[in-house]
Image 1 (cartoon, rainbow, N blue to C red):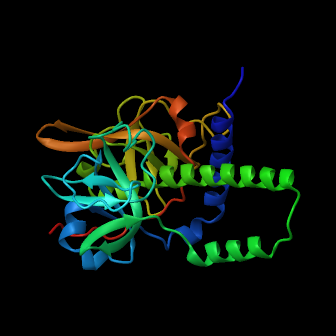
Image 2 (cartoon, rainbow, N blue to C red):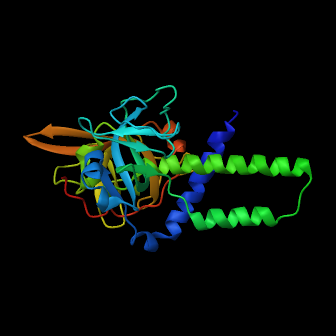
Image 3 (cartoon, rainbow, N blue to C red):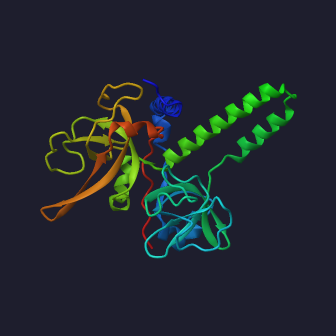
Amino acid sequence: MKININIARRAAALCAALAISAGTAAAQEQESRTIVTVKQLIDSPADYAGKTIVAVGMFMGGDGACVGRIDARDWMLQGEGRDCVWVRVEPPQGCDPATKVGVGRRVAAEGIVSMVRNRPMLFPARDPAKSAAQRQQSAQQPRKDPKEAQKERKEATEQRMLEIERERDASQSFSPGELLQNPALFSGMEFFAAGNYRADAAGCGSDAPALEGEWAIEDLLGNCVRARGPVPERAGSASAPADGELVSFKAVMKIETASGSASHYLQAAPRLEEFKTTAPEMRPAAKPSSPK
């Protein structure tokens, strides 16, 4: 059977990311992300200016409530009502501002907040020092054979495309602790969940007995979310993960009501979707922000 080269590359990236994550767990415990709604970002822009955040809302392409588009690359992330911000990071997979594909879909956008025309806007998180060093290194290199230079440019373009894919996936990926900050915020949204696999969901999320076939994922701080559907396979093989092994899979947050109380769980997507993620580093959730 032929395997699409892009899928193979992303599968390789997934394996590499899993290895990195397993080897740097101690450092990751000190990291956190700030997850906000579009309204929180608009109401308190000074709290987030210059910081990297994850904003959750609806992808609206160029047809939302924002005004004053600055660049053709910009797209709108809209919250409840008319709350809206411009975003210049790469749109999520399946969303295209030019063709309007994905408009109305609930997504997350990760980037640095900058004030543009007195309004908050999200820009890509780049390392300026690294970019400057790369430009200097390129300028210092002697002129090469045209064919060799063309080959290197092609390889650099492919590497950059892979980096963009990983950035896109990371912006849509969340740990159990991040999901538990505000489960309703993720309701109906497709995202990637990353955590340590638990074959037994008993005692996870509630005192209710685990349903047949339920499993769970847990983060480094013990935050746990139940899951239903196909168990993620070990990266690069068709074998099931061991208890405690880091897994990453595509899921949708589901909320159900029983006996007057609401509970939530992750509905895992078919395993075919797993190779669309690069298993981001697990991080505990930041302290939740109070809605304004």
